[in-house]
Image 1 (cartoon, rainbow, N blue to C red):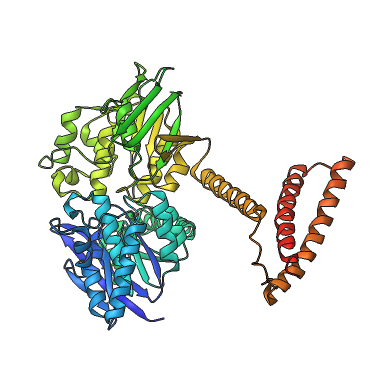
Image 2: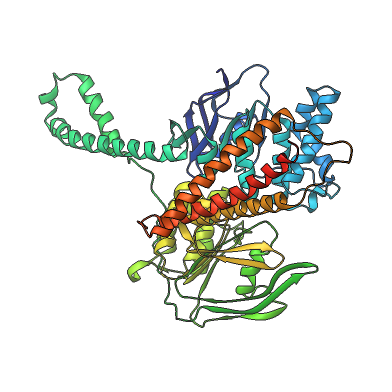
Length: 601
């Protein structure tokens, strides 16, 4: 497999801030690569450098001759004054793909683009692009880059603003695709199921791992353990070499210069930390009483669209609920009614007196972009109480969210998406809430920060409601789920997202089997008089196979009946009972098909 895209010692900085240095990576034909790095380390900038949308300080980017590259930006720019279809057809990857095709090929591509837009929920092609939400514009751009089928596709946070069915559909689409992929995403299930390689940028160093995200976690842990051991060895050796260096100059006059040079290199290695510093979430939650909230027959609709229809629920202390459902079914409206930001049409939410909400908004940060980071936090509080009653200054508090003193002097307008999300999270937690409501908190947080947040929420003594399309996050945080099924229907599922997925698949399989049995039991129309139908060769083979299968199933059924009648060992009686039901259903289907074919014999 040839290399389609190669970088050599790529370096990029903004003023005195180094984003990345000496980055050397290669994308081979057919690679599906996930790019992982801390927020603020320049992942999006690197992607833009690869496709020529931004310059770089030094190094090179080389593309194989004839290779067509498409890029899905984190916030795609589409002309707002054009209808959706015109904007899509005029989007750069589509234009480039159309230019390389003949008439038939162009029609096929446009047909595929229409189909992909429909699959992603974009059905009104005449609406102005400017009236579409950011998430809808992301879906339009995603349909465009997939329809264009470039040799290399770069994706910056492709799952943001997609609901879970759309994310699962995209997983399957990309897994089957022959395109070479390089993607930045915080969705760990997505990385695990799509990627065959992971590239990590850690403190300016590039590490490549073969395999999916689960393998990356294991290999990275091994790397960090080896690095820790290396740093420990360097520090031990440094102590010995420092003794030698402290001697009088004449004592080492005849020593080799290389040993002196090696000392300074050793000193630098001993200073290194084997792992990046993590966000520290040690904020104290205030006490919460026994009454949290009660929802009493709450109803809400917008025109013909029903959000809630007589919803009632008593929320218990310590509950952690995940809310999931398709886009537009009313998840955010639900929490806004709970917070009193939106009024129900009927019914009410009765909230306990000790409840102190902390609300992380999907819309993002509400700070003045012209303020500095430190000023925005200081305005909210002069000090923050963290665990064990310790009081810290706003500057000390911000340092726990990885804002260095220099970062704290930045204007909010200059922050990256990940930095804004960290600042938003800090502002929510600094007031010691005892009931956290997190509406899509995972969109701009890096994977390491998500892990810290998951650990914090698992130990959080208060209550949590989290709206998320991040399946890994839901599994880690939620005790049970509110599944918004649309038209005012909310299913309270007692388990994790993974449990729900398994239950849904089993339910779908049972429904399909029942429908198949029902159809098999429906009398089939007889052939027209005078023209008796005869078995085809294929039907004859099927008829012979059915006779053998029916005999085998009857024998297994009889053996199970004898076991049940004997009162024998019941260690796996549940499994045998389940198998007995399965056999009965199979026999019904196969005997009905045998009778149908026997009429043609």
